[in-house]
Length: 251
Image (cartoon, rainbow, N blue to C red; front, top):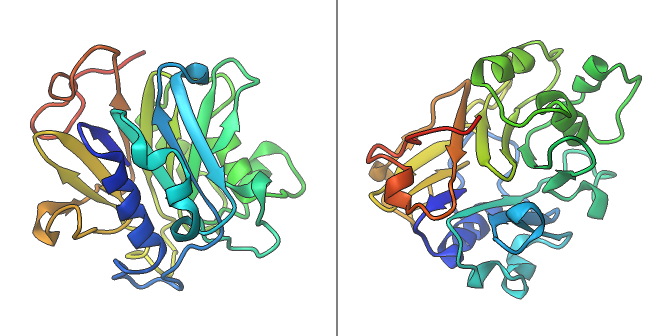
């Protein structure tokens, strides 16, 4: 994910590198994410001001056919998927997931497996864990995510899942959720990293040397929700202080 002043093609290339395992340095079970990909970006003439793209093919195979490399935008999130369950592969399982029928529109990208969260929704079973997780962590009437309330929702999820790492986007803000179950077997695999420059903020599931040397990256705080608000007409330097943190928030 990138916010500020950046080249969309560079962020897409970074996502491609992670999806192919070229940047893998972790304790996880897989290095590649071949089961489709998607993107969300700010676009003034798109529905709700948010452009989106989905493709069931591997990112490296199809990303150059997408509109993403040529985008001019101040926010872009790219998600490459590794389907935990082979049956959950296809258009209906490809992120970003979308909710537009409620009180407020949201787009959602999730990295992890949450096979128990449906119980909190009163469901006997769930066809797709990421959809159930989306419905749990972003209530239907939400306009923004409060960090304390979101962490409470994360911590009450029944054990048995892995990561709740996600990017949730609405017309006013984006939120990066960094949370991993305490009993996960691969904590480094679900780590996230932050790159701050005087032009933009980048948050990634892996350090990407093509964007900046490894010592320019810092671990993203675990058990956190990073809010990235935006206001049309303000420049990236207006919207982000020099430490990369938002200078204001919408409510």
